[in-house]
Length: 69
Image (cartoon, rainbow, N blue to C red; front, side, top):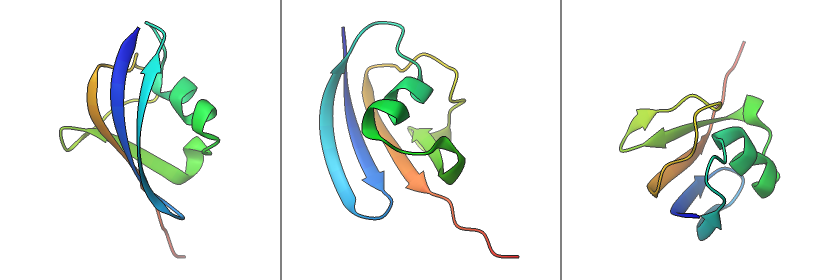
């Protein structure tokens, strides 16, 4: 099991501490939180991470992406 602290900057700003099974990907984390991966970027230590990477212990941020055309 791994422990992550998640700061969410989306519709509502929130912070959650979660314990995830080893091997959980960032896609899995977003699914658990009910967040569409097409609408956010995940950063760890200020660096974007690929959604298919396994989540690592520590602090991550989920940031809503806004685009205009």
